[in-house]
Length: 277
Image 1 (tube, rainbow, N blue to C red):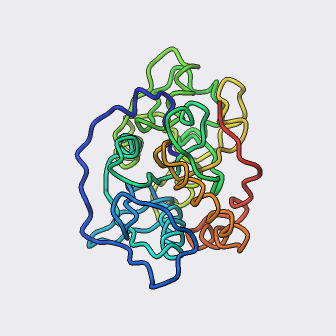
Image 2 (cartoon, rainbow, N blue to C red):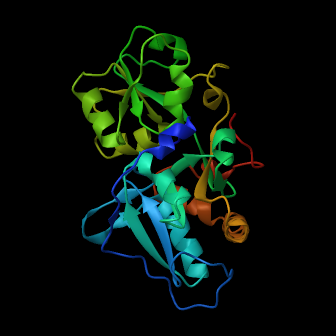
């Protein structure tokens, strides 16, 4: 998803809350050796965006991206330490070296590649429109009140096609609340997020439709590849991540993680790495 369209958005400031819990890696012989901000730990910026990342009470963290990071940490003899932030603050935390990784359905984009390191793709995701009317085409958004999460690529790309401004929200929860109360006609978010939420009883009377391809919105034409984000200057760290992710893919582990989190295993068929322009 989640996923910034304009680099300026990453300069948002936010106070990070370091979670009290941590994910302990088992004793092991590291498959990969790389430096982290804090020796023995893998510090990760995370926000609540199920099923990709989930933030619960008592240090209860989960989701697809989290499970992938746990697997990498376990193989590298590291303890995962989560830092909870709003979506718009994830990238700034990576850029400022406050965390080793940023996670939460982040798209591999050409704009982002200018300032960030992005791992080998872990899965693919699709943009969707959430509405009571069953909106599925970009052209149907004209004249409607449309919302998206600040920092997500969807907002920037779709905004270029509209005469009115998209309403931006600090997180997916706030977006969902305004959609449910009728303050929005259409919400733009991840298809996987919507399908998962409906399976949990959310989004009643809301239709979630994959956006039909529209050349004005590149992310609607080809499913976005999702990456773990890291500081662009840490080349060795990035190379180690890529090597481990490729192994996890080859073992079928990511397909298994997707299934365990309620999504289709086919999402692990990422193809060759590419960037959304």
